Length: 117
Image (cartoon, rainbow, N blue to C red; front, side):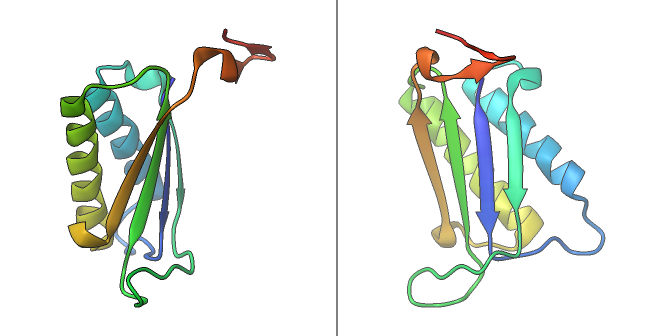
């Protein structure tokens, strides 16, 4: 049940859709982690006031949470894929894109009014 949240200082251009961005986020995370895409949830907060490395240049931060600890190769794939996505959609350079992964124990996830653990 991966969850991915994106915050970026950049808005989408007029020819891009938020729905397509969210779709690509879930697709990329599912593929990198070997999870079925229908269980991945995503949110994007764009055009947020952000500052990094003492400048207001475009930047982004992805927060990925999931059940279980991915392998190093899976984490590398998630990071590379999401930084590429930030570059393609938002023009954010790789050195201004953070990706944070948190392993959340099953018993701390809830769905449909009950806890999973």
